[in-house]
Image 1: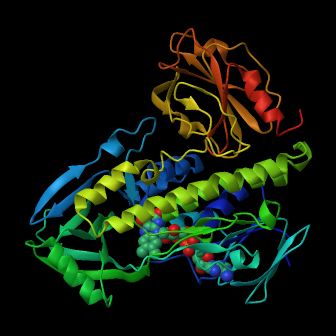
Image 2: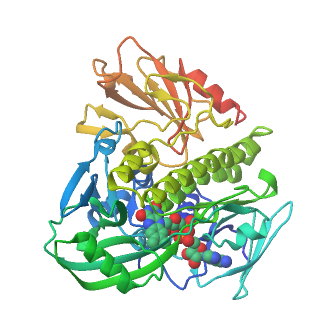
Image 3: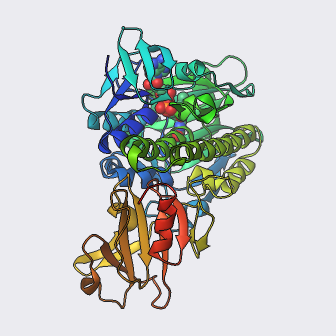
Length: 504
Ligand SMILES: Cc1cc2nc3c(=O)[nH]c(=O)nc-3n(C[C@H](O)[C@H](O)[C@H](O)COP(=O)(O)OP(=O)(O)OC[C@H]3O[C@@H](n4cnc5c(N)ncnc54)[C@H](O)[C@@H]3O)c2cc1C
């Protein structure tokens, strides 16, 4: 029997486990499958996920292995009908304005490598017991783990979800897709674009460009779904160009289901067991939001859980509940939005390619991940306030900073380490000591005209920025998940946000 915090599941669980481990929480990760995923599943990391993985420090390892893609085209009657990428190129305050096409196995392997020794494959959880003081699970192989908290990221058929009695309701449109990861020989004008093919007024085939020259095809078929019929359909949609299938690495089918768990926290929000990823929400793969939403759940949960575990004696009465409940409030409403967008997209596959791409454009905030926001949800972790682009509940802009001793641009996200609140003191502020130094860091961001060398204080880091106005001073409280919690006039007002959580 061990006493670690417990994480059950795949990529969502691996990232949560890695973040907790880095924050000093002792974790055990159990996964029923015999080894890290070897083929298939998710194929794209969106812009917000790339920002998260920048903060985690693994994006640099993924970038050379993936393929950048920011264009959706439509093809029909032997020619390209349209090409559009405005929802990517118009993104502001982010370095990566594209999908990174990369297989889920690569992402899982990199996460798993960094958790060397903490991931136990071949451990299928069969029983979960939650008491007032602990959670205990027993696996099929007889391993027992007792923990203060547990995360069920054990996929769509979640054992953990069933054990905590959460319902998983929704709709199931009768749509069955074939999916292929394949290498093809073709005289089709290849391009690194997501191509929606139109035939007879419908859009039943999509071609997703991938790393290593791999091609991912999604094919909607009526009647029997087989690899042979899927390949025939692809050939027809790519005509008049010739297509030969050279080697198919992965073939699978999936039935669309749109479901959400009734709660993401056991005991109606007051318990010790959390749900994340596909265990909490499932939807069609259109828009590529599944893995991305799981990663966002992990990024949203780990800092909260680490604070509750590591800083129990520093937290005010009621702060634990507020912190944890805000996970449920923010991520469950977001998951419902994700489901609605994927539902609209999958139903548009029986309409024209123009309509399908129009729906992508309308819902680009979810597909890029950059429009997901937590304002107006009633979250206790968001105090409605704002100044220009800095708005409580919105993603923190990834802005460009400078330092006299550094040549070139410094992106804010590249300077952040996951786990602490960030106070951005923008403009000229009097020097101030942070009351919550163990949980927050201060970045002074001065107008370019200021002398950054002269004002560096003992603990704060100081930058300049050409967008910081000389006569304008304000302060931004950024949560560890890189969402803005509060915007105020000065550093002290941000400290008051932290006072609601922590004892000074
Ligand atoms: C064909 C296809 C294409 C997709 N394309 C995309 C895409 O382009 N973009 C995107 O973002 N998403 C995509 N997805 C969705 C994506 O794969 C999932 O959303 C993602 O895998 C969810 O991750 P997860 O960690 O929540 O769950 P999973 O990946 O399902 O992992 C759950 C893990 O829990 C383990 N497990 C299950 N039960 C137990 C148990 N009782 N005890 C211990 N371990 C258990 C399993 O072994 C598994 O490893 C696609 C999915 C499919 C099938």
